[in-house]
Length: 168
Image (cartoon, rainbow, N blue to C red; front, top):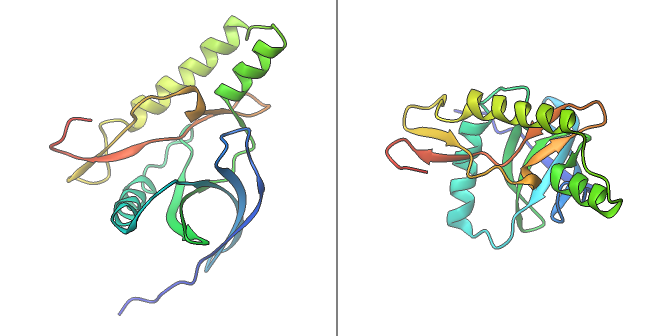
């Protein structure tokens, strides 16, 4: 018999510097309370929800510092969501748009450091998997999948799980 741990997710604010459907949140569960990022998913039905939860079980095992750690998939107020570790960064899409608005390019050194961090994240995760029947892949990454904080730390979001016998 398995014990059921009660989980509560509360949305506490906007986090549009990652994406328009991302919110700051608080996750309460048996291990305590923690700040999280909550990505609201559009039009996820019950079948999608089952896949999201199965994917989350595999992705939570991928412990790579430069990968935004997925904690779970759930429903909040009837909406399917992915719940990620808190990370106080902005998406590279947001950063590039802001710099373009200021007519200022990112310095080459910064671009190379971000590209290196993204490559390390992809190399550490992609193709490898804690599950024999599935593998972790990334369909991009797009600029919106790359998060950068004020210290220059980089996290990549958007990894997915595919069956081991399927090409991504």
